Image 1 (cartoon, helix red, strand yellow):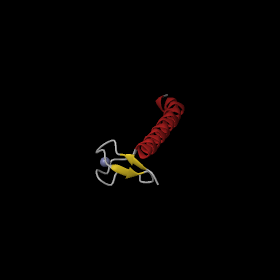
Image 2 (spheres, helix red, strand yellow; image 1 turned 120 degrees about the vertical axis):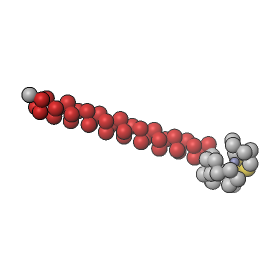
Image 3 (cartoon, helix red, strand yellow; image 1 turned 90 degrees about the vertical axis):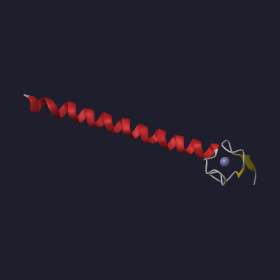
Image 4 (cartoon, protein in one colour; image 1 turned 180 degrees about the horizontal axis):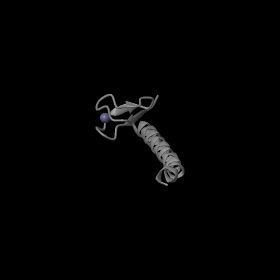
Length: 65
Ligand SMILES: [Zn+2]
């Protein structure tokens, strides 16, 4: 069981912890996970927007004419 140093407060955090027990800052590993989750959400947002645009492009002309 090794310890890593918190980037935020400089305190010791156990490697298996996701957040610093002192300042509650996420560890680098947890930051990476948070970033991956945010990136995944953003990709799904773009995919959803693309599908929405495709539906609108196909659907709108019929209602204008
Ligand atoms: Zn800390």
